[in-house]
Length: 185
Image 1 (tube, rainbow, N blue to C red):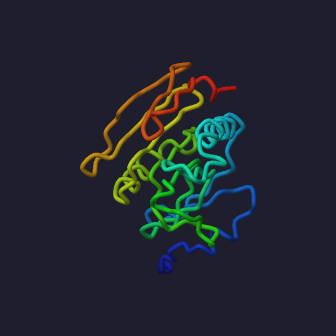
Image 2: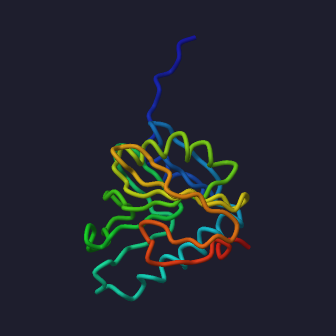
């Protein structure tokens, strides 16, 4: 029996997914997962409030950012949906008119869960490095940890590992301090 020709996934495949699923195209494969679990969603929402509140309503700030929950990124042949992403307004003065972004963010945060940790670390981190993303945060709400990475010479350099209720004052938002415990239930 002959093997049928492999069909590369397309954006149409993502659009056809049921609403309760999130789809990404990573390294030419369609990756599908359920919407985030409550602890995961709470951590992401809390971080969005902590970081996003710094810049919300201050469009004239010289150091302004766009902080977006679950943006759809169409970059380098991949379709990625990080938990949070941020763009410096100096680099992206206006939001795109499309439902997705084609500009590499300056910062991404992935909230780790048992169903996403493997792909976030082994596939998405290298993709983010290849794309030239400057800062990456990995947060594990179960272990209550934050890992802060900076891209240096094309490689991720671990800058900080924080836990429990440590104070967070980390790049690229080092001018703002908050307690890591603000992200836990």
